[in-house]
Amino acid sequence: MIELDNVAYNYGGAELFSDLNLQLAAGSFHFLTGPSGAGKTTLLKLCYGELIATSGQVRLFGQDARALSRDDVAHTRRRIGVVHQDCQFLDHLTLAENIALPLSVAGHNTTSSDLTDLLGWVGLSQQAQQLPPQLSGGERQRAALARAVIMSPEIILADEPTGNVDWEMSQRLLSLLVELNKMGKTVLIATHDISLIRAAKAQVSARVLRLKDRRLQLAGADI
Ligand SMILES: Nc1ncnc2c1ncn2[C@@H]1O[C@H](COP(=O)(O)OP(=O)(O)OP(=O)(O)O)[C@@H](O)[C@H]1O
Image (cartoon, rainbow, N blue to C red; front, side, top):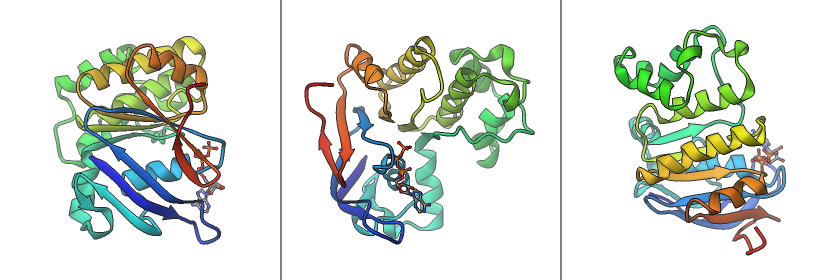
């Protein structure tokens, strides 16, 4: 579904990483770990076409990301749900409106029962009319996950989805992501949280990749 071949990226200075290879097969579950600043967010951005590789090839659903037209990019983005590290809500819209935003941007009805179901699934039915600043960190993270899946994407890319929450909430978020994978979705989670990865490995068959010293490698059995 997403393939990276010999990919390198730099923001204008030295290469952040190079010779990077990655295949996200349908239905797979991956973790991406590595030190702060190694380039995990950048790698996710390459995977959803937000950035274009400096060299090498990124294929999204079989198409070269470099050759995608604007329409192709929009279509591809609908197939990939992204949970951003900082959630990226619009503070003047209610939680329900924020979650439904991808639907309204795509011209779909935003009062559908799907939205109600989704709010229930992430346990936020009571908070639907609140504004993002009124929410706790865990509520915001669950809302970010709901927004990422509202268009029924095939792939979910989650950037530190448990970044600012306690252990219990991180387990709850993990179980939602595992549930999505069991429904057939491809999942990639970027995280520093090794205990989260260990907890996931008890529930799902996951590959753990480490981005370090400009290279992407399978992590050792120590994780
Ligand atoms: N738009 C940008 N322009 C220039 N440099 C950038 C830009 N975005 C990120 N960087 C730099 O690229 C490097 C990798 O950043 P990135 O956010 O991908 O790392 P990360 O592994 O996700 O870090 P963290 O774990 O702290 O979130 C960092 O040194 C960062 O400062």
